[in-house]
Length: 322
Ligand SMILES: C[S@@+](CC[C@H](N)C(=O)[O-])C[C@H]1O[C@@H](n2cnc3c(N)ncnc32)[C@H](O)[C@@H]1O
Image (spheres, helix red, strand yellow):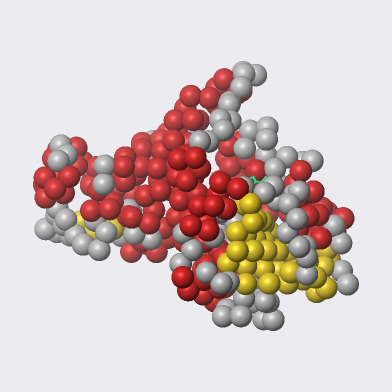
């Protein structure tokens, strides 16, 4: 017989689907946004957003018990400090929660078929969906980029190339951190165009978007730092080492390649690494550090080292052989 504490763990696990849905739906109906920078009670929030008061009240209670909201004795709710610290305001996290809401649908509709040998299709995104996906990535990047910037030694770094750098959130964070730094973001033509259109004037001169395939595009060389942030996992075993080789080739003498991606539990990550690997089905994977290090060594990179960026992510840095 399971003990009562293990029963509680299984209950937690089996109810995690509901926690996910409570969070993404609260965002979709505007509750998290409404709570950005102020406190609200459930009846006021319901009236303001024209929602069902009983459902809002129960949703607020669930979110408070999940740690997303803090609740005062008077029934006022605010976004909890730990949630805001991890993800930002309700506005900032909304695009990522929207993306996550659709992932839930995709897993619910396809995982069983995938297990039974059927397909879990990977649909080509239209232009609106590419924009939404890029905004979702930016929303997560706002939370992760400060950790990346803090973990990277930017001394002497002037030219950076960010392969698959999205609409430039990491590029902006780097430019903010060092005034002498310029970043080239290599992206698909659609994302590169979105990114270029969103450049803030302060960075116009220092961030450049290059549209094309990041393995094939001519993006020059002599860079001090190359970045592969959340991109290796979307490539298969044949293309992933080629992408590392491409990045290594772009580096000048003493340049460095930094790879930031999900970590498997064996490399100090959590179960999220294995879950994300499943999310990449047969087109990508979360690779073990040992494997990535081998690919880096084979691409003229040495002194390959890993550090934990946070509980889910590794940063792996290798130095170009002179
Ligand atoms: C998971 S997102 C990561 C974005 C960003 N690095 C971040 O961490 O927020 C992967 C990015 O790789 C880009 N990408 C995918 N295939 C690509 C290719 N063949 N060439 C250039 N960019 C590509 C996508 O457009 C997307 O923006």
